[in-house]
Image (cartoon, rainbow over all chains, first blue to last red; front, top):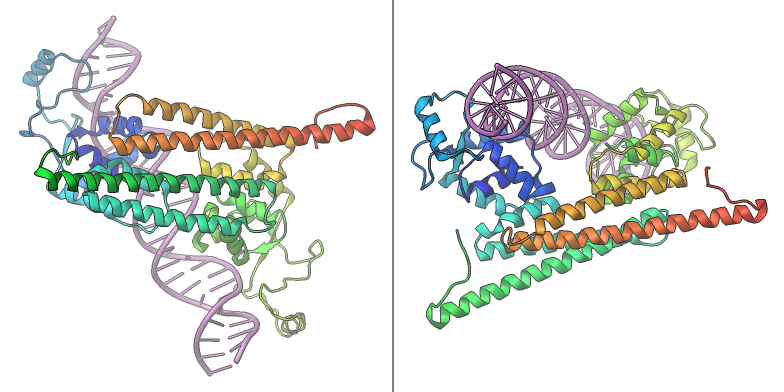
Length: 214
Length: 214
DNA sequence: GTCATCATGTAAGCCGTTACATGATTGC
DNA sequence: GCAATCATGTAACGGCTTACATGATGAC
């Protein structure tokens, strides 16, 4: 499901497919490497579902389709004046819709039931768009999954099962899983602290608020 | 590619599909969870490629198709005597062929070029069938991949990129990758030691040190 | 005789990939 | 004007999943 990272990126600013892929590859690295062959169909699906729309008219505040590269503003304007026939090959900038934001939240909150590292990493990368409560839920579900995984690994670790390579693999898996668990515990603790802090400052005098929401 | 684990398991003993799946699920856990919908076609493919064959005739030393469960030997023999029409639904035990052993080695030695944890784990689980040299090659390729990955992760770690969740994710990824690297270093060291030990014991009688080749 | 389990398979569909085809823009 | 890159798409294919269909065996 690359819907999630697409919506996540578009939730920050409108982008066109090509640029989207570059960001997906760059900022999310191995987490969400996408090929055009799956990106464009995904965009088409999302548009059909009204989760995104082409930002053709008057966007929230951006200039109309500034090019990616180093082209000067003058040249771009001239080009636009000369010929702006909407050939199918001009780039299409997409903007997230209200429905898209809903979908993003749904995707972030969805519990696939699977124990998938990639899935969690992807959600984490965009969990800032969740409310604190939902974020803690996400983290705690992850912790539960990791706990199950650790139990499974330990079961496989039993007596003399497997050769020494397999045994080493399982031992390392055990260690890695424990590392994941420690990490998620830290995330949960930090989240609880942040929530407590926010509650405290709200209670104090509606002072300052630390959490960015948009 | 579940060809590798199938051949790996069959390289130890002949098995039929159902039993194969159970072992795949049990001994390799999340590493190679398979559904029947992919297992049976895979077996058919492997048989067509002459990598495995039905163990119908005279196996290396096993009794003809002993059942999985707790059925007594007498009852089984009686059943076989009564009716052994080869209906399509009787179980089919597969045995690896010489070609299959070649294929297994090829799959273990193949360098997909991808940086895939699962792929390596699967190879490790059956790398005992490789010669020491090839095994060290496998480990060193893995180390190279992990080193590249670490560099990539560190590049993403740069300045103030991303929100705190993404940053935490990357930091944790860095830590995990370092853990993988330490582990693979240990594996390589152990492998070199084992090779040296083998060479030494050969040298004790032959008075000459050479590279282990078989 | 019937239920749970063992056992083998097929069909439809999903989601991704690579390879290919096409067109627009810009720098030189 | 020509190559490099930007940009959007389509086609074919691969491998895995779920759901379904079928039949054999053993326990009771």
